[in-house]
Image (tube, rainbow, N blue to C red; front, side, top):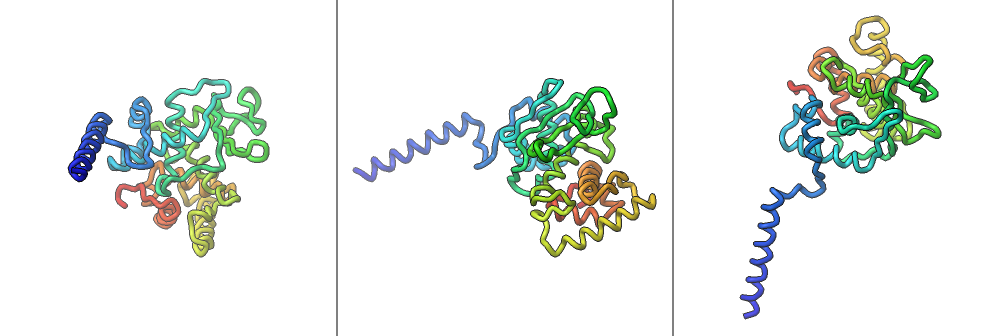
Length: 263
């Protein structure tokens, strides 16, 4: 009698679970977060990187975008934040770390969007203003400032090999080990640091001699080289692989992803 009663209870619980599952249209895998439909549509409309992913990878990308929007505050100064702004900023954050599991930017609390370029005093009106993005330091530690025109251009058809927001998030990945030095030690074994530096300096000499298509801003220092090369790696991966096979291989190992279709 007790056994029969127990079996009936189990069957009822199973039936209820099945009904709930059907009503939800299928439960999200454990740890996955659902992105709002309007943001999904914007993601599909504006982010080419997302288009290259498999169906399962797209769901994971959406989940990471949703998670980023929960733990990082995005605000506008001199401008209102739109859903497009939020989605592009979050996508810029996820792209460099998509191969690293559930990475969180522990060194970031706030992204501030400006209506235009700004100067070293964080002013976006008057004077000489040529900064499109910046990771804050000192009293601005934990903050990132982005120019909206630069953010939008990075995901437009005119972006070429450049994406300012991805550039700044790569700086944050680099900074996660405590130093913004072009060597993301959390992502590479110690023995690979010296070969990576050697390869960087070799390419920097090529840039200086006009024999490289990498943006000359990469000559600023090793940290800027990593960020500039990473923009190219994510924006034009097939071209980057063809023109810089050794760098492509190294960045694939660092970011644990190979975005070129031929890979």
